[in-house]
Image (cartoon, rainbow, N blue to C red; front, side):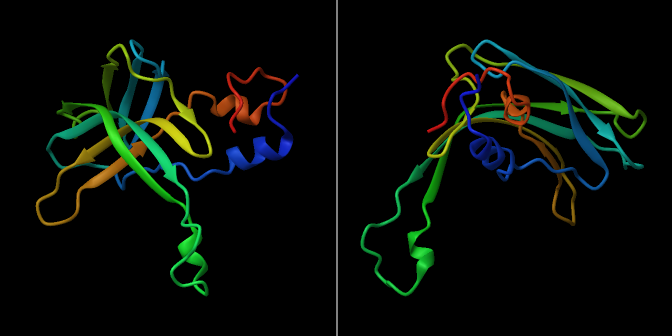
Length: 169
């Protein structure tokens, strides 16, 4: 018996999650155990020709929480005042520098998560999110960035009948 209803499963599957590719490369995850003491492994894959230079890969664990909207809005006609505000803080972050991606098609990375970090959870009012970002610094333009946000239960949200680890209230 599934803990989530079909409506909840659909709403969670449609959430805006920050996965996107850079212009010339993207992040591919091989494995991710998203809990303290776990490990995140994957690679940065080159899609097009790259100039020589390093790519900095950063993994981090963020805690995000939602603040309730004000009960009495200052401007009642403005409905945007009733939107909840999200706050976040970084619990852990680590970087690795990958060189030589201009000669090869991919370069691997591996991060060991310190003990004591929470498991990955996406709920309505709180989230502990793990994020992997690959960034290529450029001199005269904004950095090229690719981000992957692995969700520990993404497959469970889309597959009816699989056990869900917790009720998202």
